[in-house]
Structure formats: C-alpha cells, structure tokens
Image 1 (tube, protein in one colour):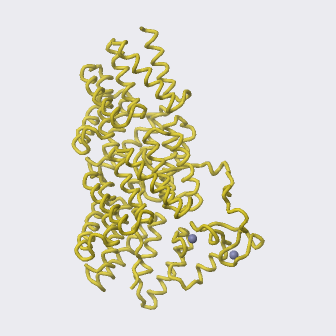
Image 2 (tube, rainbow, N blue to C red; image 1 turned 90 degrees about the horizontal axis):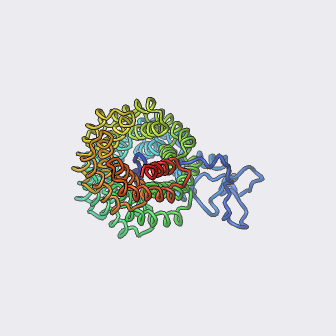
Image 3 (cartoon, rainbow, N blue to C red; image 1 turned 180 degrees about the horizontal axis):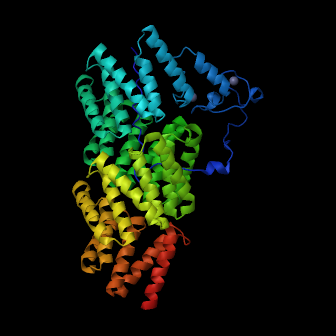
Length: 556
Ligand SMILES: [Zn+2]
Ligand SMILES: [Zn+2]
C-alpha cells in the first residue's frame, strides 16, 4: 500500500499577533503579472496540447517554471480528469504543487466513492482527500477521513507500522491546525516515540515528526522544550537531505521562527535569508513554500522595525497568495492580517482597517469564532480600533479574544498573556487604571517565570506596568521598571527598535514629570530622531514626539 508521505503541513504559519505572515493588495493596482524576466524569446505554449495563445488564454496553474509553466485551463482539467496517475487529480506531478481548488475535491471524492462501492482499498485516497481538505482549510471535513485512514492502518498493520505512524502524525497535525494542541501533542509524541525505536533518529519520517512536535511545542509557547527538537530536525535534514531540500528549508524557517520568538532576531534573520534564497532558486517565486518564506522574513523585518522592507515582502507574498491560493485560504488570510498590522504600525489606519475587516469576516466564516487564527484576527481589529480612538468598539473585541484564549489555550500561554496585556492597555487608555493593574501584574509575573527577564514580551510588559504606575502618580515605583526595561531593550533590540523607542519615551516623560527636565530632554530628542529615521516625519507617533519635545523646551 502506498501511503501519502506528504509532510504534514507543518511548514509554519507564522502566527503571532503582529509577527504573522504577509499581506497585500497591490494587485488591485494591476501591476502586470508578466515580469521583465519573462523568458526572453521562448514562445509560450501549453504543456498539455503544445499550442499557443491562439487556442485560448494561457495561465499558470502550479509552481512550474520553464516549458511546463503555461497551460490552457481546459487542457489541464481534461488531463486531471483522465490521467492514470494517482495524484493528477489534485497536484502537478512535476513540481508537486497542489491545485487547491474545487476540482481536486470533486475528483478525489468521486474516486473515494468508487473505491468504497467496489470494496477496494481506500487508504491512499482517504489520505489524499483529507490532506487536500486540510490544505484548503476545511479542517472539519478532513478530520473524519484522517480518523478513518488511521483506523484502517491500525487494523491492517498494527500500531507500530511506519504507515500507521504517518497516519497518527497526520491526524495530530490536523488537530493542531484546528487548535486542539493537547490532543495533537499526545498523538505526535506517540508516533515519534515509536519511530525513534523502530526507524531510528535519522529516518526521514522520524525527522518529520521531530520537526512537527517542535512546532507544536512552539505553538504551545514552550520555547525551551521546542528548541532542541527544531535544532535536531534541521541538523538531521541538512545531513540527510542537503542544504537546499524543501524539508531542510522548512526546518530552517521553523528554527528561525523559534529564535525570533525567543527574541534572537539576528540569528533568525540569517536562517530566513538562507532559506528564502534557496527556495526562490529551487521552487521559484510563486510556490507556497516560497511565500511562507517571504512572509516569515517580512514578519521578522516588521518586528525589527524595518517597516518599508517588510511592506514590500508582505505585498509580494499576499499578491501571489491571492492568485494561487485564493482570498479565503488560511495563509492568504494570515497575510492580509499581517499587511493590515504593518500598515497600522506605519500609521496608515485608513488602509489597514479594510484589510482587518476583510480578514476577520473570512476567518469567522471559514474557521469559526474560537479558532486561534480567528482570535488573533479579532485582536488585530481591536488594536486598530483602539489606535483610531474608538475604544468603545475595541473593548468587546479584546474581551472576546481574551475569553477565547483563556478557554482554549489556558492562562499561561504566551498568546493569552498577549491578550491580557492588550486588554489592560485598552483599560488604561480608557482611564480605568484600577481594572488594568491586576491584569498587567498577572501577565508580567507569568512572563518572568516562563520566558525570563530578557525576553521581548517580558520587557514590553515591564514597560507597560511602569507606564501604569506613572499614570497612577506613583513615580517612585514606576522609574525602576522603566529603567530595567530600557536597559535590556537597548542591549537586545538596539536603540532604534520601536519597543526601545517607546521605553525611552516613557522614561523621558517620567523624568519630566518628576521635574528633572535636564535628564528628560536628551531622551525625548533621541525618540524623535529615532522615529524620524524609522517611521518618517509625518507619522502620527513622530508628530506626537515632536509636540512632547516642544512642550518640554517651552517649560524649561
Ligand atoms: Zn492546451
Ligand atoms: Zn507544476
């Protein structure tokens, strides 16, 4: 029996409130799809019928380049319906890119039904259809099929057969996508343990399981447990598959995400750059793996504060995702979200809001109200409304998301802590310091315990609590917190990072309020200079900093 040895989709969906993937819309501006490097003189021909455009428009339906790049839609459909090849229904046999469309589901469903009717072995088709549904974000329809496939494997081969273990891993990966991390973890651990025993630590299946478990632990927020697994997977794949194999590149991206989450942006950037260069060269600029890689680098540059470079990458990825995956695919939606957040951070709220609304509507419809992606999207819109000053509209969204995360992820998950913080900041904006303080303290305590005192999130949290105490008028308690955060941020993020600038600003205003104008002035000047460089002079934050400095100089 041939099992589908597809890597259970754990490429990564860089999934963090701001640090997501990409986004965009420049497509509407209609930049012609034909890029300058459009293969010079070579005449465009359909790879199925070998005819040119006279027979009809030529389109790109997969990630192939060269002579397999172009086809007539009808020719490929005919071939998919009639080919003897087992995978022709749903993916290109050359580049292995999935078509991700309704026809894939139609053909695989029909095949499954025929096999059931004839009493044939359904394992391959069950896995293929379930994977395709998962790829298209239809998780609830995929689950019973994965379970059925696993049941058949267990029955036929027992619980320790390689095929059964792949099936267990596939189901685990689906449950992770659905947001049920606890159930996913126990399945993945079960499969990995047996694979290590029976297939060894360097077998491709074992490495896939190591990688996937590492990503799951990262999604759970357990970075310490995730890191050795991500490193083991990358090391093993470099040895076994070489530095340019798609599996190796996936592992580079995954370890990069982990390092970024840990706050080691420089090490993460190096891995992302290596992976992106190789994936562009080997799979081209339109392959989903390339887009994930672009998205990851964009998110990292966003986190580093290099918004212009991040925007370019975000827009590139989103444009191609809209074309190749469609506007409602989870990866496209993550990108829409990310572009929205990026534009918000740039201060372009008018451009950001429709993206956030589009993403939220689609994600509620396709994934439901409690899916992790939905909760992230709710928060993003809430944050945007808050920045716009519409606190009344923002508050119910932030409360909905926090409730959802406490219930689905628990009280100590990093995403829950982000949510606690977000709600606290909103309450502070509303002037309700009494309600905000216990939330900030709750989040900070857990950050210190779980990520230590130098993690970016811990530092932001320290800085926020400092601001709150400042607003309450407790300057003596606020100052050491502001100084602690700033000192470590300068060391770990550098002096131009948005988090660092926020902390410099907070400390400057604090010293001003204490009456120490001499100490405050250089800090406020530094903030203004930093924002002019990174955000530009017309940005709302830069303008606010300019006013702060003018005010200080007037009173001096
Ligand atoms: Zn044709
Ligand atoms: Zn292809």
